[in-house]
Amino acid sequence: MNKALFLDRDGVINIEKEYLYKIEDFDFIDGLFDTCKYFQDRGYILIIITNQAGIARRKYTENDFKVLTKWMIKKFEDKGIFISKVYHCPHHPDFTHTCECRKPEPGMIYQAQKDFNLDLPGSVLVGDKESDIQAGINSGIAQNILVRSGHPVDEIKTDASIIIDSIKNLPELTNI
Ligand SMILES: [Mg+2]
Image (cartoon, rainbow, N blue to C red; front, side, top):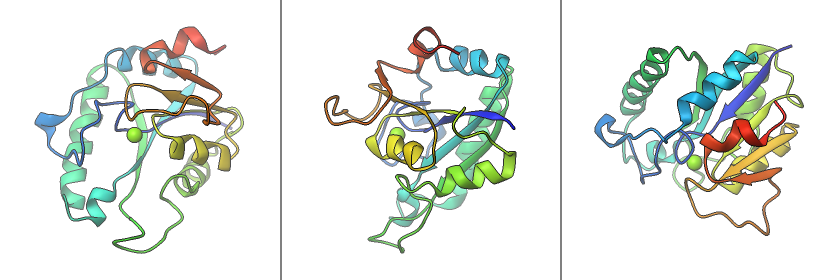
């Protein structure tokens, strides 16, 4: 079985901007690539799971998302980092229908588990919203890490394993 580092996108990989879909608006968070390399070198596969309700809200299209994703993956590859897959949820209950993929639902994580034969308890998730953390808990991931680099976080109410400033600080704070 494989272990994965699950990454939310907005607020974890890139600086959070509402309804981001343009390459020119996409800024990688400092230290992201070093942390990804650290986990990759320790045998983790890298998977991105992202809610993209902007598609349901018609703020941007599936194709806009695809173009940005292709560009982003290439930027990782330029640093020697391989992203195994990007899963996205294009739904929103007010605009489409309820679904099993929108975090905190665990649908995207379960799909990844099937696609890559993952050891979920041994995997790690990083998110900037409580819905990311709950998706991790709902799917049986043991280490669910909340970062302060995106949306404001409720440090009292969260069920996160730990809270850190950004993904940059992850290697020094986990026992991996
Ligand atoms: Mg986010």
